[in-house]
Image (cartoon, rainbow, N blue to C red; front, side):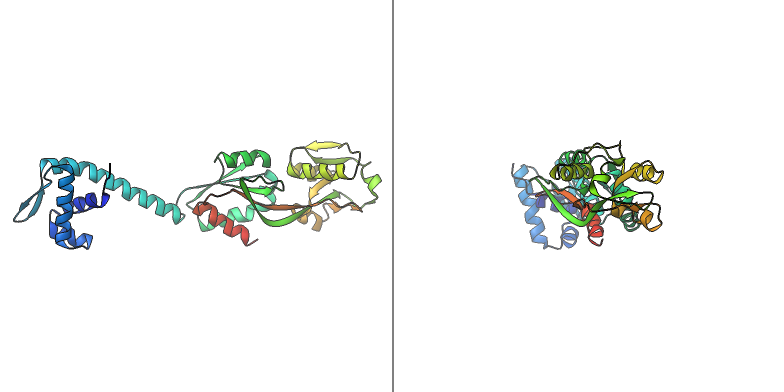
Length: 288
């Protein structure tokens, strides 16, 4: 069915004003154009919609029935317009961000605070899972954006680099070791399959190093706390422990063995248009 919605708009405005002339004024078109539109709609429906009087026009029984539905439809259009405008202006909606606990705690917090300050009416939800799980959630539409390291990006996703981060060995005291001595120490590291652990495993394999961790824990924060207590040497992300290094709570181990640099960024589905909420958050990230 070929429906000309403009004709129904003219009908609705004339019915509200009970006048062809007032309807034409509101629509900002000529009276003959309004009359022609009404005649076209009546011709399509095969009924008379208005009866002319000295004071204007009144709806017929058929016109009244049609008006009930058109009025309801117009309210949906208006509500839809207002909802989209509100989302566009960031006055409502939900932003769902996927990130590991470490990334959230050590990188995202300033951006989350600033986003909330700028757009307090947008609800922000943080989903803390392993990056590989978050990527699945992104594909399924359960999160809008994933923040973290994602060096092995798939073809259906776009990864945008924000900065580079570096993993290092840390201790609760100043020590200098050679490579053989290092891997004889009690090394504390995050469990697989975290991105940092996967990256560490790759460099160990590449250098043919026989390595068995002393302790494997689920979070970056636990690694640092265990190292501070003297439990062993930890593998941590340097950018996440700068305050501890500055305050001598941790010390970078002096060893001639560099772990590879990792890229930190955000991942989005390819060939999709991000919402205004996602775009606004990305703009904050770009200022990093």
